[in-house]
Image (cartoon, rainbow, N blue to C red; front, side):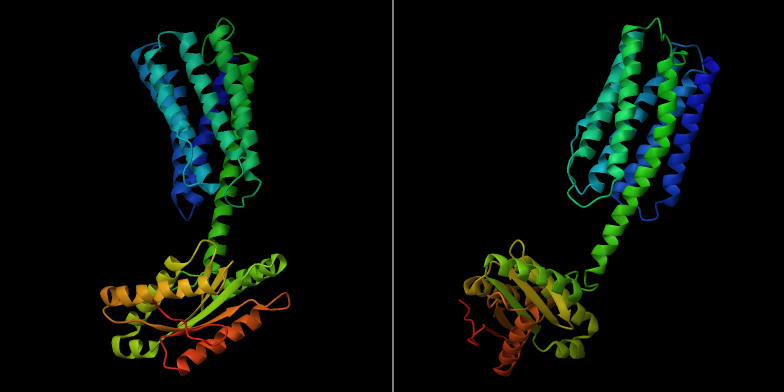
Length: 391
């Protein structure tokens, strides 16, 4: 019977080592979340290998057993902390709880110091590991900051099952040690623990791979909506968002402005300074536009050296303030950063009632833009064709 427990735990260790290798092999794009998941799998696999090895090497209760078991607790707890960080990132939270990390330090510390007291070390290690699992499950159950699939609920089920069995095992070892006096005791709870651990290891791999796929899909969608050179929205994505915001503006009667701008003498920059300088100028203007935006506004590259800015809840004064920020910044920063001046011509269109359309607004803004060019460039015309004045 003890041999059966050992076989199940050996299978668990092999499964965990397989998971660690698999994650390393199949995660083609390794970012912080994937790296933490890989570390979590590796730490847990090493932890279980050490824990199983401690039962076979040297006398039980000796220094070898104590050292390997303590390192095993560090690996298992550290693996959970790494997984917790990976799950936070996959749920779109850049900052998460530090409690799983602190518990990962406390588990081996208390285990090593109290190793001579069987009941204490079993209660301490299993209790804190169960608490760690519960905290990670609670993290996954919280509403994510980005849209994610059902993999998080799969992982919640996995963690809750592991938590229950780990706590149960710790409870027996702490208060009924005569029934489970050792790691390999043939107690029914020990069998259930080993079976659940084997099953949930496989399910954890599925959950982690689905989470990684989710993130990869979001990244591809994000990249598909961005202009490759400037990093702002491309024309298609900007128009989709602008059309949505126009509907909201018309439904609730909020003002909205569209500003279309075109860099002045851009061809001259390419011809005299080279296309690399032209690219830098486009990137500089795009970054300046993003810095000048208010929260909720959107900027997109409409084509060539043309950009469009969507300003929600914006009246004439808000559009004027934006244009003023942009022109003052370019006048001051472009010569310093690029070594030459930059300016632009622009036109503004405000939403006109419930029947207005994005195409009509863009047409009006474009007409004002070409009016600004005809009047000598480096100016912005409002919806009435009046030049905005800088102060």
